[in-house]
Length: 301
Image (cartoon, rainbow, N blue to C red):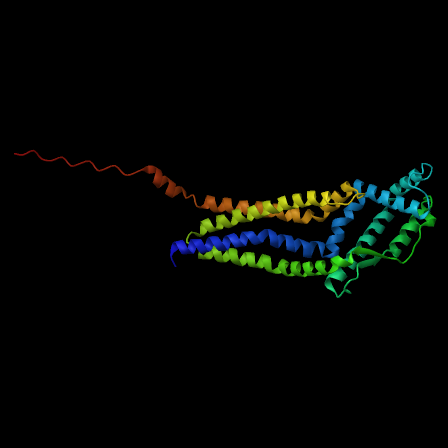
């Protein structure tokens, strides 16, 4: 095969491999990070101690207690006491237990809807009555005002609207397949492109730079996604708490993105430095050898 044709084919394969890197990392994070209950709970567990999240929980739970008790949120005689009591509860170990139980219940319900058969036209729901009962019992033991009036009803709380279930299930199946095939295809394309290249060292350097570029684009995508997500939140949502949740869920993706950037730059630098041979450079800088001095001729007799 002609050298130019080999280099062109190598460039196409390496470019495709580098293009698939960020998409493969994104799909793997969605399926194996967010889709795994253990990893999901590990990611959201520290949020129980986040000040912004605790404040949002205190606002929501306090408003719910006042609403169920028939007390207006602007009542200066009751509302501050309830809010302060709930805020104190968010600093206890029992709150962390309730936090983990609620997140596990919601995550399990969503996963069952995405992986198993779910009735068409029905929302994904979860029964939070056991979590509510534990919360009520703990607040009552802490003498929180109006805690005994919190209703514990087995009401199905919708976590995914009915119109979004089909699209989410289809998207999850696509991501599940992409999480396996995209990284594998990227590796095959990169190895093939390096093998067919006439100058393999340059192909390795190009693959490294492309991987670093993919990692940088992924870092930028996570940052842009955060800004867009927070901008699209409906009114009444605690934005600092939502930002903390977004950062916790994307922590692994950000780490992978920076690793791709660092690994790609390292491979490119090593490939470039290995091509700078000292012997070749010394020969090039020595210049052409001087012509030998002509032999003296004998004078004619």
